[in-house]
Length: 184
Image (cartoon, one colour):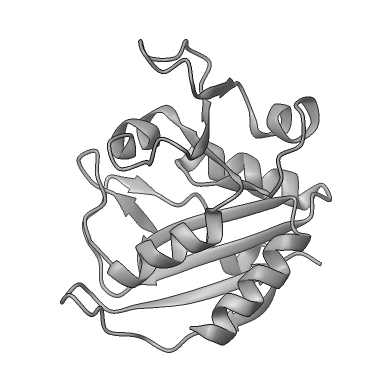
């Protein structure tokens, strides 16, 4: 994990936008308002990677994880509707583009954490020249998900800079591997 952390730190510091996702082998990302697996190593990687940046997520993704987000995390809720009652401490924006180009820059990159609309916009921004890194976890198997990652990452034209072998989860969850891609 030390080489992995070093590459994440180096590339993450150079990126304006980081696409973060965990998906099964059929690009499934969620089921019944939650994540259908628990991966301790992936949660640790997510915390380490996203510390210091702004987490951008859609309304459904936000609702599924609001109770697990620490109060000191900077979260941008992307929605065309108003913020839920009591959530005024969160940043509200209509789009990733608005966050990237219309607001005061954060100390770190903007992390596109889901759902499908947020990831789709992040992919479009990366294809228009926004310096982008993708930090993707692939979970072994298919979980009959009702939420999906919008497109096969192999079709983006990004350069792969890291791929781990399949790894067992220390707490008995499914095996997973980590892939990191950049568009520069």
